[in-house]
Image 1: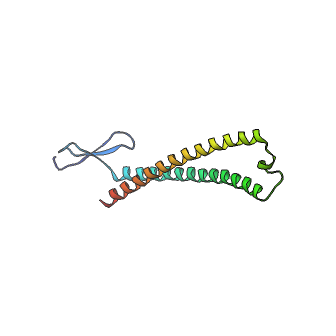
Image 2: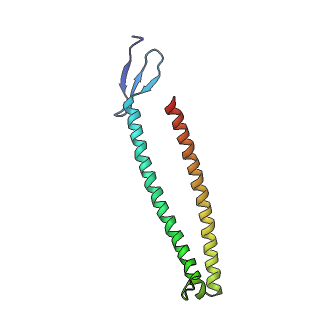
Image 3: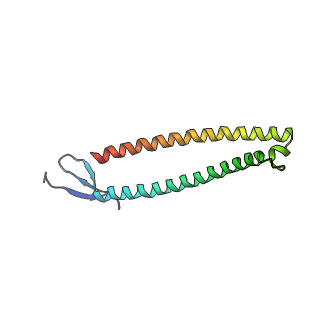
Length: 129
């Protein structure tokens, strides 16, 4: 019986093959394929989130560019021409907070990007084994 393999079902997707000789548990090809499918689904969700984030960033950037463009074009009703000292001071405080928030978000996104790149390198190593 030493050379024989037996399959035991732990749960509906947890089919493991156990070698009686060394008591190691092995996963099946189907489990690996199911895991790869789950990974693809999660990556699709990540792509949707990234696309939504890109749209949000583009919208914020467009508002900022429109505001500067109106001022540069000499629009009489642009914010910078009609706001008084108090309005400009309040605006500056809000824009400073926004700038710091965007810097913080950019650092977080860069950290996530580096982590995903490391994950990609690790996956390439595993696949080349």
